[in-house]
Length: 59
Image 1 (cartoon, rainbow, N blue to C red):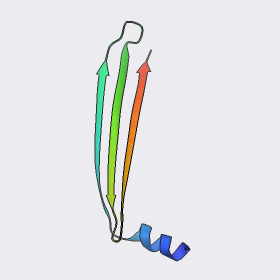
Image 2: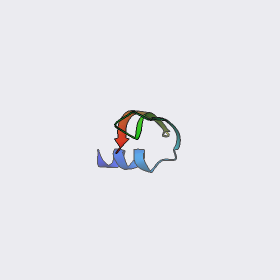
Image 3: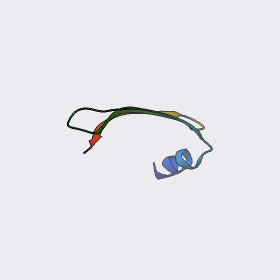
Image 4: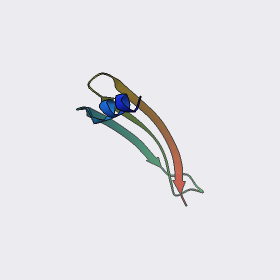
């Protein structure tokens, strides 16, 4: 299993990333934002896709 993981992680790969953020103002919060992220990784024998969503604010 360790050898298989090593071969998987040390193989040639490429990665594409997309980040989208939307900033807006709300009366109490000066800078609020929502966002999303997608990261696609393609390895020699497999691929991986990550989706993430964020929400936050700066007071």
